[in-house]
Structure formats: structure tokens, C-alpha cells
Amino acid sequence: MAIDDPTAPAQALASVKTTIARAAALADRKPDAVTLIAISKTKSAAEIAPLLAAGQRVFGENRVQEAQDKWPALRAAFPDIALHLVGQLQSNKAEDAVALFDAIHSVDRPSLITALARAVERQGRRPTCFLQVNIGDEAQKGGCAIDQLPALLEAARAADLPIGGLMAVPPADTEAAPYFGLLAKLARDHGLDGLSMGMSGDYETAVMLGATHVRIGSALFGARA
Image (cartoon, rainbow, N blue to C red; front, side, top):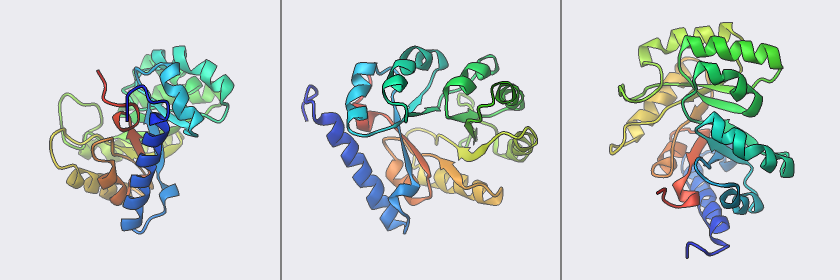
């Protein structure tokens, strides 16, 4: 497909959905059990518009400020948009995040839980929260250590946050399946259903291993600069 082909976004979306359906079928799952989050970070409203026209309504952003600048106008035109925060969240941005997002995928420490709980109580909005696990024990990545997950989950439940499940990003340039399998086991062990895992390079594997939310950027928008 040519980069300037106006049909390219719709074709890309259809291709990703077909891959999700195929992977779900192989795992004896229904395709509609998987939410496709189109990762629109760094993309302009003009770049997002073709996906909206093709019917995509769930989008993910990395930064609160960028989302605040970009999405209010788009949401005015498409009120059924669901917006997910998939990047790291500073506690001092919790109020803004609760006001804007329908789901937050990067809850990874008690101080953030406290800040989110306060914002939820003040605003009356209850975005779904995924607890992020540093599944590969990588110093440069966010997420709680695996052995800290029980305490973090207890704190989130005590704060009455709406817990959607677990999120993780496996180490780059390695086979993702064992990490997805481990996250799925952790979710089962703790009575959680949601699994936010899988990106453009590995979402098919993630779906086969139980992903309920996949975060797809370059497969929809093309490679990032």
C-alpha cells in the first residue's frame, strides 16, 4: 500500500482484525473477547481520522499532555471513543488522567494508587486500572516487581480502584510467549481476567495466550520515525 493511499488505514485495520480473529480461533476464543487499542501517540488528528472513519473507537496514548491537546475535539465529533493511557503516569498527573482516560494501563506503585483513588473520589469518574508488572525485571521499564504484585493488588483493592487486570511489556528482541504465559498465570493466581499484552510485533502470540487488550501502533499507522 502506498503511504498516501487513503484506503491504507482501513486496510491495515482490517488486516489486524483478521489476524486477531485467526489467533483467537486457534485458542478457541472469540475475537470480540479481544479489545484492539490503536496506539496513536505522536499521531495528529488528521492521521487518526482515517481509522475513526473505518470504525476504530479505542485509542491509546502515552502522555497525558498530548492527549489533552488532541482528543477533546475528536471526542466531540465521536462521543463513543474510548481512550486508554498506556504510558507511565506521574502521580501529580493522576487528576488529569482520571478526567480524560477511560482506562489506565500503567498503575505500578502505591503512591500512584493513592493519587488515583483521590482523583476518582473527587471526580466520580472510575477509569479501569491495569496493574503493570515488570515481567522481565528490566531496570529501565516501569511496572512493579513480580514479588510486589500481591501487595500492590491488595492496595488497589483497598483503595476501591476498578481493577481491569494486569499489563506488561516483555523484553525486546526475545521470544515474548513465556512472558505472556507468566502474566496470564499471575492473573489467574490473583483472580483477574484482564490481560493487556501484545503489540504490533507479537500480538498474535498474545491473543493465543489470553490477551484481552492488545496495543497496536505501527501495524496500523506505519513505522514510527
